[in-house]
Amino acid sequence: MAAFWRAKIKSMSAETARESLILGSYLERTPRSGRRHDEARGLLPSGIVHDARRTWPYGLYVDRAMGSRKWDIDGNEYVDYHGGHGALLLGHQHPAVVAAVQAQLRKGMHFAAGHELQIEWARLIQELIPSAERVRFTSSGTEATLLAMRLARASTGKGKIVRFQTHFHGWHDHAAFGVKEHLDGTPTVGVLADVAANIILVKPNDAAGVARVLGERRDVAAVIIEPVGSSSGAIPTPPAFLQELREITSRHGVLLIFDEVVTGFRVSPGGAQALYGIMPDLTTLAKIVAGGMPGGAVAGRKDILDWLDHEASAAGGRERIAHEGTHNAHPVSAAAGIATLKLIRDTDACARASASAGQLRAGMNTVLEEEGVPWAVYGVHSFFNFFTNPENHAIQPTTFDAQAVPIEWFKPDKRERLLAKMRLAMLVHGIDLKSWRGGIVSSAHTQADIDSTLEAWRRSLRALKEEGDLPQTAAATRAQ
Ligand SMILES: Cc1ncc(COP(=O)(O)O)c(C=O)c1O
Image 1 (tube, rainbow, N blue to C red):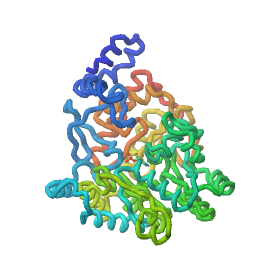
Image 2: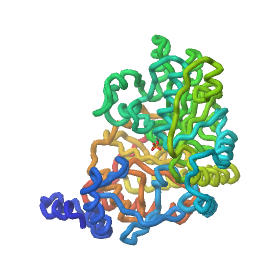
Image 3: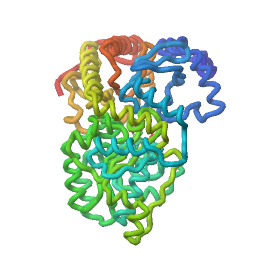
Image 4: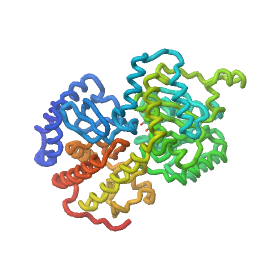
């Protein structure tokens, strides 16, 4: 057991001890993860390498994964709804992806030269993503959104970028505020105020707000958006808003960037733009595009990507955007990406993942209703999000419509301990969520996975009730 938490438990008050049954089970099941966490805290800030993996009291150390499942170093098995942060639409170790990676490893890892896979990979992206006249590879989604913003600024000669509050576009300086904190657009620590001043934050889904900004200013290069809404639709974006956004940006000669790092090759083989029939000027891709390996890309209009092109820039008598990157179009990532994109193109993988998520959302809402918990599980495509109803609105889980309620309802739930315990209770029952906010489903999830998740959901809610975190009796579920 992690020393830190062993000490914590010893010092628990009677009330905290009563609360600790879920915590106790977790500590008992995962002693090796706890020890590794202690060790890591002496090496890595907070013992982690990605803020989203911070879990109370410590995160799992995972040994292996296959299909929809993963196993921690203590030997516990989990249904995985984290899906490689969304990179694994096909689940873990799809045989075709593994074979492609192995074949490439036998040929060599890095040639510091052009290789044939980079052409095949780009061609597949061009075939699937409607706006992809040209493609530039990067090593991550963060790099992709950074490059897209620079392309937008260079090609328009304008400096400002409009973003939506709570929408996430990676961790670089132009995106590192206005997501969870600093919604007023002030810079987070370490980011220069001069950089933050070039980002204009607008409320999610506020078409009038965007129209006002673009109407009043002549210095806006682009608007960037997560097309299904912030954090995989946690604050949903109605498709009609995307259409409106396209019209407003076109009217004002401002570029529209779809950040399809998560939605690309997931909500449909051609991403949100193919699904909704809306053509952005630039698209950022990562995660699924590289089949579970590191990688990303910016795709879009040729005249904009031409700002990276030596000959086109020389012909236009203008300075070119310099862009390097040791691992751009890494051969092993290209191999995994090609195998993945072919399967997505040629099978119903996206539709299957979405159907499983739909079944899960419906089943979880039925459980909430039966257990008298006034929460809801909502979402689109292969995402599921929890509405934990901190303000106790009168809702009915099975008819809750996230797109119909005011977005103020989705303010962060401050009951961190309750939510952390819910996540922990699910882990104790063999389910690894993306976070306490929800999860992401792959095409490898089966009916057995869904059934065991629903059972774990019921048991977890009951455990929370037993520990006094949720009301024991059925709560009011008046219609919305
Ligand atoms: C919508 C979106 N854009 C950009 C990023 C950043 O991608 P990466 O983690 O590859 O840097 C993410 C990561 O989760 C994302 O969800």
